[in-house]
Length: 242
Ligand SMILES: C[S@@+](CC[C@H](N)C(=O)[O-])C[C@H]1O[C@@H](n2cnc3c(N)ncnc32)[C@H](O)[C@@H]1O
Image (tube, rainbow, N blue to C red):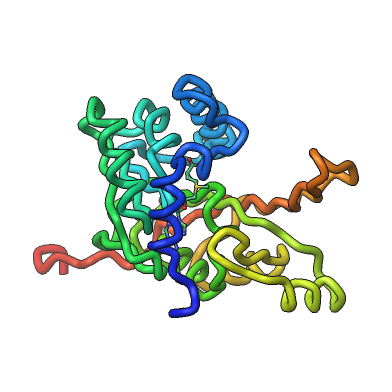
């Protein structure tokens, strides 16, 4: 793990141009950045409103400067974001100082979440996991998400995908990885990790890259997974109810 310094690399990107590191084509000015947050939060919430039972608290893993936390604050009473970069967190707190229900927290980026069990109704991550070069860190975030969700809470994650099969697997294993080009998962691999963490999968879909090229780059395959924590999850039994 020491091979990758996610914290320094993302602090440096935040210092150079935080909005470009977050939203690339939508970073020309604050208005475009904000509009992209409004647009992308719709993707994050797709299919979620129908199954979510409560809207008290939401958590984003890899929140950057809070591009998605801002529009999300209209849907939840309390909104938390965690990020490996202290610089992203500092800038996000400044941007969103007018929203007292939004909280940004710096973490070590190694897969643990600094919250009590059963704290959130909704947890998600968007355009972050594909930057993480260590698969066990992503798996740890998934099982930590299960821990911090309330019973019947909902999770939704965005990953970069790759096809199953030996050739694709060899290609992935020899592809250079760093804190920008992180790991890709097959649909069955990441679905298994979600089930092992204790979730029931509500929806999992694989969106293959189009065959056309975008400005000379091949767009990535995308995986979206929506999952729910059982509402029979162990709750502390109070002495009075025994
Ligand atoms: C492309 S930005 C996306 C920010 C936000 N999700 C959005 O859509 O506006 C990726 C973010 O993930 C954060 N990040 C990268 N590796 C991380 C890790 N291991 N743990 C937590 N955050 C991480 C980066 O600091 C950066 O802010």
